[in-house]
Length: 76
Image (tube, rainbow, N blue to C red; front, side, top):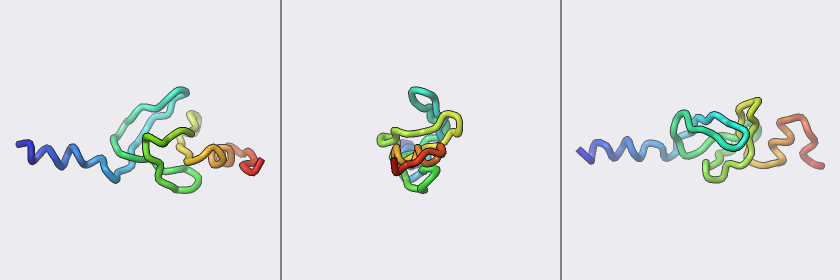
């Protein structure tokens, strides 16, 4: 029986997670190992996720990309 459960336990690898972003963190709605940056399309491992927009419910790979998405000058 454990053999049939093993693929289910490992199915989150290489799969995008669906998250609900909150002010101080996020809640996993659908499990996965990464999210996709809304600006660059880059994969962001959940352990590395630091930047997101609560209002837009989007993830960003870097602070500069988050600033760019919110209409700021990322070069400044």
